[in-house]
Every structure is written in structure tokens, then in C-alpha cells.
Image (cartoon, rainbow over all chains, first blue to last red; front, side):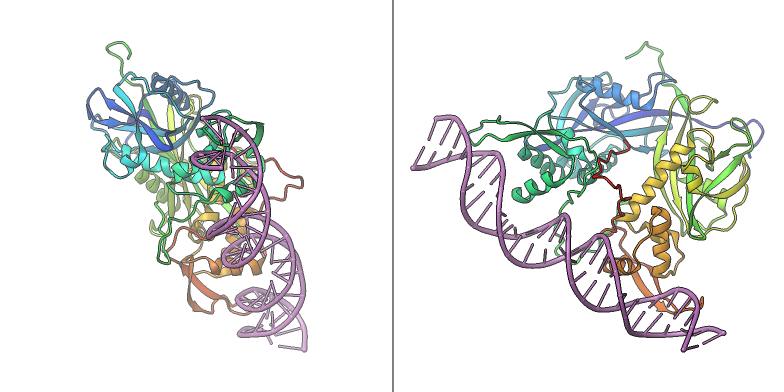
Amino acid sequence: MQADEWSPPPVLLTVDLVILTLREAQLCLLLVERGEDPFQGMLALPGGFLNHAGEEILDAAHRELSEETALAAGRVHLEQLATYGDAGRDPRGRVVSVAHLAIAPGLPEPVAGTDATDAAWVPVASVLSGEVELAFDHRQIVTDGIERARTKLEFSALATAFCGELFTIAELQQVYEAVWGTELDTRNFYRKVQAVKGFIIPAGSGRRTTGGRPARLYRAGPNTVLFPPLIRPVPSTTEEDTREEGK
Amino acid sequence: MQADEWSPPPVLLTVDLVILTLREAQLCLLLVERGEDPFQGMLALPGGFLNHAGEEILDAAHRELSEETALAAGRVHLEQLATYGDAGRDPRGRVVSVAHLAIAPGLPEPVAGTDATDAAWVPVASVLSGEVELAFDHRQIVTDGIERARTKLEFSALATAFCGELFTIAELQQVYEAVWGTELDTRNFYRKVQAVKGFIIPAGSGRRTTGGRPARLYRAGPNTVLFPPLIRPVPSTTEEDTREEGK
DNA sequence: GGAATAGTGTCTATAAGACAGTATCAA
DNA sequence: TTGATACTGTCTTATAGACACTATTCC
């Protein structure tokens, strides 16, 4: 124990959002251009401080999400990702960010939020490659968020969160291909997806007349755990690989 | 944006630790008896506030870990688990806790830390069942931590963190059985563990002369990702199950 | 030899990967 | 009929699960 009048150091809490969606078969991420210092003019994740001392963290995440996307809160997946609190990450002082992962079906063009001059969908590839630079430690957060999404696609029904209420199997396959960044065999995908209990359930047939045979429609099933899982193909490391883990 | 002189509400940050180990083939958790209000006299996770405004969160977790266990920092697995910040979780005010998961080989009897009157290893079963009550929202944290450990055992080499530098396959099997709470077939376990590339590597033979044939020894291999994974057996839901996920 | 623990081998069922063809619509 | 998209079926290989026996040590 410390000296008698020691008291714990206060910190400021923010929530940051990795909002993913599919646009033209590309995995995209919502970024805002910062309207204030620090990092004014730079791209960053949407997010912000707690509004008041009593605001729940998850509520704050929902609030930021709708500020930025004007979204019906219903059909959006939102979960806590991880907390980033390195002492040097924010020049304003000790700012700890609870990052969240949000996933939604093809969203409209974003709305500029409070702190943001402008907001836009950016393909995640350009962030992962380093081509687009982000403020703070947001690139790390994006990396972690995408890795989370990639893993959850294997074992949970998260993929349906990228789709509308009704979707075709081909659309679902596009989700997997875009998030994983791989191509999948259509025939095996059909077989496997339909073998998973409670993943997707048939919902009428015929739509999407883009010149071919109309596709059957499905909606998300009751199960959120996928069994058997849809294992992500290994990125074909030519050699007998010695894979290391991130953390 | 708010009124002009609005400023974000400060919060207090704690780190809490779910420290798991194996004691006599039982999965155990380190708990402390709280020496101060709130919840004085109640059992809780070891943890505490940041020491000073510049302390890194992970460093604080390491500090609490060694305060409580007097442990060589080398052979301990420590990772961030999740952040718990419900507005009502701590009567002292807005206290946000970044929970961590720590795993270590059979530890000695614990040392009473700073805030704690006493510390002890408690079988996790008694916490999960609700038989032992914990302060704050610590039971939820424990539940989440154990679920994390169970899952990571399937896909990562985390199990070796429960073992000493050298271990036998039988010991490794005990880890899996204790954490998963299931019995495994020895023959299949031997086959699968040895088929995983880079998981365990032979290290001399013969030790453990408890009256039978001496076991071969192994050490942790270079890979932290298990392929193929060691899938946890389903808890034999008698019916065709409709499994729901936690979050 | 007997007790105790360590380790192996085989058969079957399920799932994954590779691969080619048929079905249904619009124009 | 053609073009376009949706869908299905089979064969091979890898892994999971069930199960019974042999091996090495100490006494």
C-alpha cells in the first residue's frame, strides 16, 4: 500500500468502432476524417468519449454507431473487441479506448458525425497494407478487428450479419470470400453451409433475376454456433509451415 | 457536440486477474479475501488500480500477478480477456476493469497481497456452480475467462502453459480433462497430440517413476496454433441440439 | 509373477477437397 | 438457342471416435 493520501489515477475512456460491411463484394471499413486535434485531418476510426459518467460502454458504442451511420439498431451486430490503453497512444493524456466490432449489411453512404469532418467507406485491404495511414493505434485495432471477424466466420453465424434479412447462398459465399480474402469452391460451399444445423433456413424462392436462374432465398437460422464449422482454408503456405500466433 | 465547456468524464481503471492453474488434477482459480470496503471480507479476483497515470495496463496486470503469486514472470501466460465497465458494478463510482487471463503451472500456496487479507486456490467448479459467491461482477469475469481458456485449448498451445518446462503426454491430457471437465480417450489423445505439427517435441525419456513404466518427456514446441486442432467433445446433449451462443 | 503406468494399432464414420455436369431463367 | 446464373453428385483423402492389446518398470 502507498502513502496515506494515495488515490488511483483517473483516465479518460473512449469507444472506437471497427464497422465492417460489404460493398460490391469488397470488405469495407468506415473511417472518418478527424476534424480536431490531435491528428486533425487524418483518417481514424469513428468513436468518442463517454458522454457522461453514467453512460454504459456498450451504449456509447451504439450511440457512436448510429451517429455515424444513421442505422436501425436492430440488424447490427456489435460486440466488444479489446481495450487499448498504451500510455503514449493519445497525446491528450491517458486515454483508454474500448474498441468494438460492428458488422452490418451493405450500408448507405455514411453521414458525417460530430467529431468528424467527413466519413467514408474504405476497402480494408488498403488499411491492412499500410497504404492508408490511420491516427492513434487505430491500424492495430483494425487488424485485430478483422482477425476477429475472420475467426468468428468459421465458428459462428456472424456471416449473416453482413447480409440482409433474406439472402442467397451465393451472397453468403461472397461474404466468406471477401472477409477471408480467398476463393471458395461453390459446390463444396453449398454442401457445407446446408449441412450446418440451424445456420440458414429456406425462405421462399426466386428473386435476383440478373439474367440467370433465380436463386432460393434463406434467412438466418436460430443457431449462432456453427457445427460443423466452416474452416478457413490455409493461405497455402508452400512449405510445411511453422505458424506463429499473433499474441 | 455539447456545450462549450464540456469535458469527458474521468473513470478509474483497474486490472483484475483470472489466474488458473492445476492442483491435483483440478482446475483452480486464485481468489483473495477483500480486506477493504466495498465487499470487505468477500472473495474476489486479485487485482487493483493502476499505480500511476503512466503505468501500462499489461504491466499493471503483471505487477498484480507477482504481488499475488510471487512468480517468475518468465513462464506465465498472460493475456487480456475483456473489459467490464457497467456503471453500477462498483459502489465507489465509475470503475472500469480490464480483466486478464493468467495461466501458470502448479503454483505454490499464494501470498497475501496488498489489498487482500488472504488468498487461496479455489476449484473453479465451486465458482461456476454459484456455491462460492464473488464480489462485484467477478463471477461473470471468471465464467468468461474459463470459457476463453477452454476454447484456446482447442486451437492454441495454451495447454503447455499449465505444465512445467518438461511434461508427459499423460500430464497434458490431465490439463485438457481438467479444463474441459471431460474424460478423453488416452489412445486417441496420444495419436492426435503427436500428429499436431510443432505442438510438443520429445525431450529425453524416463522420469516419473510412480511404480509403472517411465514416461517420455516433452517440451512445448514452436507453434502456438494447433493444426489440426484438438476439438472439445460436445457435452453429449442427448437431443439433436439447438445450441445458442453466449453473446 | 503381479501391480501400475506408458504406449501402440485397427476399424469405422464423418467431413473436407477436388472436380464436372444439369437446371432454370431471360432475351 | 444462347448466355447467365443456380444448383447437384461422386470420388478420394484426412481426421475423429470407438475399442483391446503390448511394453516397461518396481516390487
